[in-house]
Image 1 (tube, helix red, strand yellow):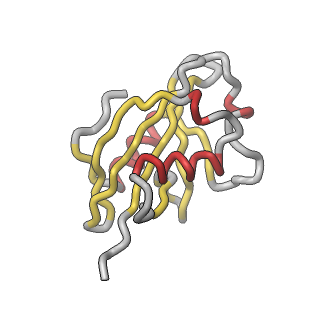
Image 2 (cartoon, rainbow, N blue to C red):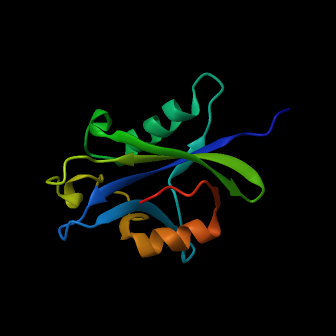
Length: 126
C-alpha cells in the first residue's frame, strides 16, 4: 500500500496598505499552509484548487499561479503552490468564506515563521 501524498497552497493578496499578505492556517500556535491529500484520479494542482474552492469566496479562476516549489514536512515531500490575487482592489474580507476561523491573512513575517516550520527548497521570492 502506498503512502498518501499531500499538496499545499497559499494565496498572496494585497492588504489595505498595499503590502502582500498570505493565506495561512493556524494549528496549535503555529502556522501552516492549507493542504489536502492528492487523490489518485487528480493532479496535485487540481486537488489544491478544489481545496481552495472550499475556502475562498471568490472565483478561483481569478487566481494566478505565482510559484511552485517543494516543501518537506515531517520527512515527506509536499508540493507547495503559491497563487496570487492580481486585483489589488479586492477586499481581503471578501476573499475568504466566513466559516473558516483557522484561516487568516498574515504578513510576510508570519510567512517566514511558517517557512521555518516547513523545509522549503527554492524559497519563493516574495
